[in-house]
Amino acid sequence: MTNLSKLILPFSLFLLMFFITACGGDNSANAIIVGGGADSPQGAIEQFLNATYDGEVERAISFVCNAQREPMRLLYADMNAAYDSLRERDVDLSGLIYEVTTEEVDTATIAITGDVRVVIGNEERLINVDERFKTVNLKLEDELWRVC
Amino acid sequence: MKRFLTILAIAIGMMVSACATTSSPAGGDDSPQNAIIGFLDASFKGDQDRLLSLTCNTQRELVRLRFPTTTPLFIQSSAIAVAFDDIELTVTQQTATQAYISIGGNLQISGGGQSAQAIALTDILPYPYMTAVYEEGKWRICNSADISLRGIIEAGANNQTESADALLCEDLRGSATENPFYQLGAELGASADFNELAYSVTEWNPTNGFIKITSGIPDTQLNVVNATREAGEWRICSTPATTARMMLELALTDDISSASKLVCADQRETILPELQSLRQRITGLVDLETRTTNPPFYEAVAVLIFESAGVEQRNLRIQVAQVQYALSDETDESATLAFNGNVRVQSIGLLQNIPLASVMPATANMIRENGMWLYCPQPASEEETSTDA
Image (cartoon, rainbow over all chains, first blue to last red):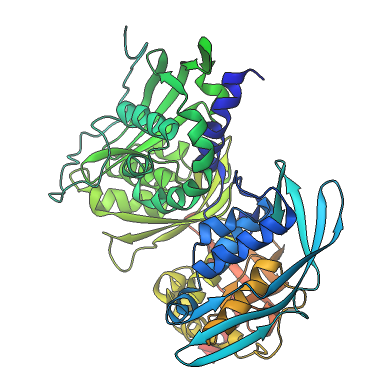
């Protein structure tokens, strides 16, 4: 492929998206979406969590593997009530600890432990994530790490 | 340098006035060709606002949703220049509200330290044509299924059976004059303002879906129809399975009026309460305390966010994509349809499958009227017997 052909690729992909992909429904998970990811598995997880808590769904989606982007977009369309309420709270993710438990050439797993600290007014609440995020899978796609 | 090598307009009919709207157009261009060039140019430049203004109403949200994730890669494109002088855009069919444009010729791409290179437009487009619609006083790019339905209606208004037949799927070809949408066009007449008709499109997958006419037609008119792609182009179609799926989806989104038009007229009154209560009956079977096992990470994080926000999440999404429709005793005019499989009920942190047979009859009769399949669950003979009794 020539350099110019490579440059034109994203444009072609966009046009393919417009002309071929579905608006939703059963095959929408196969939609072609390009771009995004992080240089390390831990970076992908951290940036994903920061973006989701900030309510920046499109940025968060860029750290998710292609196959899960459309389902995530659909699911997060129902998050307005949560994001509205989150605006009245301070959330601190600095108490989370990320440990890479396995790393191969193009896959990795991470365990997330620790607490999410939520403060509303004078009240503080700690939500422990040790049990729910024992194994988070990541995948190397387009030479970037994405949660999958 | 000439802008187009060939522009040939073959109008297949009707010089219907299309300038009804007085509202300010949200965007678009003065000809289908210029709309295409503007769309391509905006795509290259990553100019989302212009791209959206050149996209038809039914697909604007799709483009808005898809575009942001492609933006980072468009930055590369800023290093290149694209000339459209050598592309060929030929309007092969044009009506008051739509145009088919065949695509040919080359884009001239320069930049990246290289001299200009010709790249065939057909190499980067999935089909050798594009379609445009005329709405709000401007031409906009549209690859939406409704373009074929618009064509059938307008062909009906102008008594152009051949044109309408070409927009029907293979199974229905030759039946244009019976088609309810062709007949709708005939009733509206050639002087109707077709801009009054608004459409929405639901694509189940890249080759199948359905169109709903959302305004501008009589309340009694059938307003939903299946569309399928044949050789890349959307064609209006009808099968027992697509009728059943449309009816379920419309009922589940509380569009009971449209759903009931897919039921045969003599059973509509009986079936109406079933359609009205369908969503409620399904949600009544959901165990809200059962959480999804091993949800994907993004969903587990969504649950965590709801927990952090102190908000209970119970917005149930009901999907029928997994339902299977088995046909038996099929003739040209009738068939028996069996509902198999599950309805998927999903919320954040919750996914359950409910057998459709638990809320719908296990089998139902389907009949065909004017080429369109209708849901007609009670066999005619039984009904006649009961009426006689």
